[in-house]
Image (cartoon, rainbow, N blue to C red; front, side, top):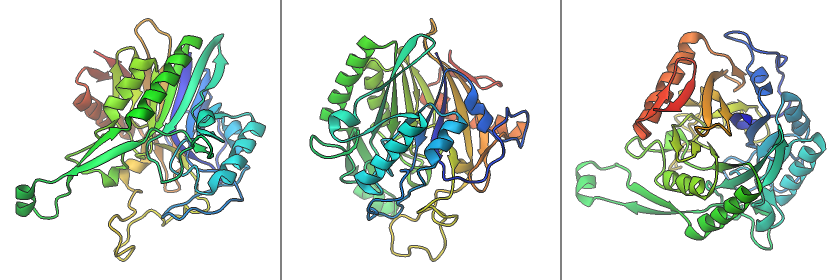
Length: 371
């Protein structure tokens, strides 16, 4: 089974070039979505005109017409368990689900109960079945589904902070080290669901909204939060063929582990301006939020460099992977980069992946394999 995988997607009817097959630098990258058996992305915004706005710094929503646009662009399947899902409450997500269903775009990650929110969406292509889960670890308070509350599928994370008082006295202002681990009951529940899906389907894919956006993770601790690698490996051991990560808004390393492939962060694909997301909402200014401990400063270089991931499942040697680099313009629309830019994206991706897993080899054509 051949999958086309992209990262975060926000659609709000932004004017676009036709999604023709891209041929060279400067062409729209939307045409890249129409390859393979299934195209998968993370829907990073609720599609709704109703609901109550959450009390948080960035609360986004886009029109329900975005669902039809997703279908027209070629998306078959989207994950919904992410940190903006409940920005307009359960009603906002109910609007989203109705719109996606009407447009024929399948989804996973939201439900009226935890059982429904963590249920896999099973799809078929080429005579083989794929079970798709969507979980969120970047979890605002109250966004997770419970036995009697609508919400998203969650794998919660526990955190503690370590201070070296001698070192901090010598280097004041240094952040503490953040220890993190996935909440064991949530991991065990996810493992059980994956094992069951593995018995009934040919492939299992897990979308995970996790990690730390690039401006906020100290280089000494990055690029991955401490909980990510152990969690991903446990889910692969339980039967997942592919882990699709998103939330950091940049490319992170990949890892081949056992019979699985872990994409730690797939970056951005398209990020339209919408309600709650304006051209200057995430750009740090000298006088912006003077009393806030964290300034919104996401939109810099890593935000604009991304890729389309071509994943093959079912091969004798395990999953196959090839990257097609893309760049986002100032309005976060995807385009094909110049050859030298594409090469630099692949080079940085290769270096980061080798730091995590020295056996990973990235070819000039974007092919990625374990050595």
